[in-house]
Length: 266
Image (cartoon, rainbow, N blue to C red; front, side, top):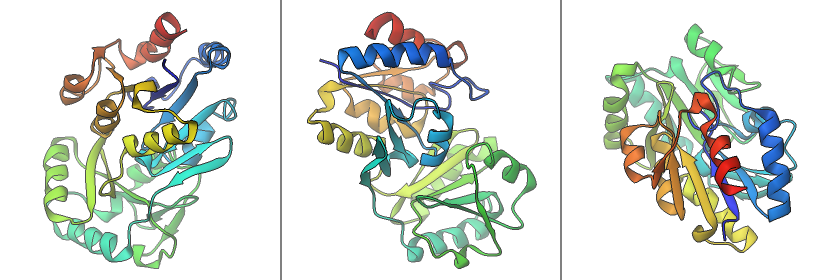
């Protein structure tokens, strides 16, 4: 019996303009409550961003944020992963600045409750990040940050994405780099991914992966798609994501996830 229905956000549940059909979601959540199902927002986004996105629904859904590093339900933290140590992420930042791809001027460091960018951050990157991070702090150097870091997000040129990811994974110990869409790469603690967060959520409710259905579109969704009993990819998903999916549905711009849920799961 399906109990948890988890979906990625950008490129999957959300349209490309970051919107979704709120009336349809309310119908789904009301029906889920009757059936004993739970809707889960599983994203590389921060917890604050997810709660802002689902402001009208926060008491009715669970959140797996920062690619599985933080799991929350009804205001209770169910799981929070270990932070990335400064002796890991500071040398990594130096390598990026000295390396062939990217720059710390197009990078954001995430903590549980705060986010840090450089004061001389690229102006376009800074503007774009305001869509995902409701508030943040500007610092002269990332060495000033004293909070515990759980994720680094860096922007790369579109033509560099795959090469940059491979270079990061070959040159930076203790972390894993994965594409998330919009020419950004998330750099997280090795062993952290959405399946880890969903695993803790399943354990909390006394469920297993056989009770889980997931939707995704990008590389950071592959682990949870392999973990779940049934995985669906949107039409606009990466080829390697479609390859691990049990089914390919419509485009994110057409609200394919909510359409599928309403037609099949409720």
